[in-house]
Image (tube, rainbow over all chains, first blue to last red; front, top):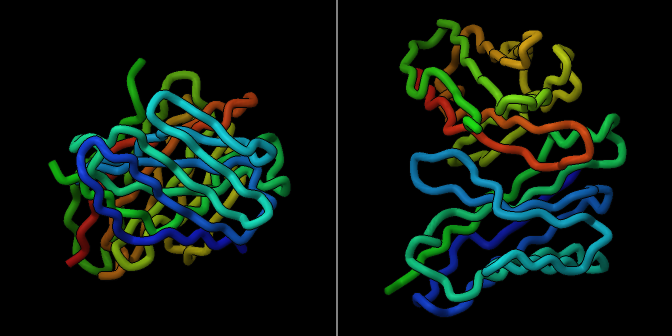
Length: 117
Length: 113
């Protein structure tokens, strides 16, 4: 089965860029996702990348995918204190699922991002 | 458009009891997935329902079950509760038409004493 690994903590200063890294073992995932969770809340979908893409940019967020090394990263430009949260990467959409189902995402343990003013 | 709603938000039960959690997906979303989140195990997939049928199931005992109704609302049930079932239970909905985005509800915090 798939395993997704992330470093547990990251601390940056406000205004700096943050880079959160993730490695995954199952290359059959069709999509790779980044979610954000604030205390006491559910998960917020930030962005996702199709497995045949190398990069996706969405405003302050840049996702890089290195398929050879099975490495995914999320870069947050101009990090703000409001970005402090836990960030999860997840893989899903294995070709073994039928009907385009993405229902069984495999999550990493999450990276806690702390932004210092 | 309203987001995914889950009820109740908080629940306290005792060992041996059973519990039913409810999830209403975003209007038009036909797939509902359930996840369990604990500090030790992280986020783990429970099951997914689409058109009232279970399509995928995670590695959980048979005490965990679910169903989906014709209006896409879903319920999950846990019977014979154990202390280890204390967790945040998250529901996510998605459109299954080429879109691959799952939207999560705020979760139900279940405490088993």
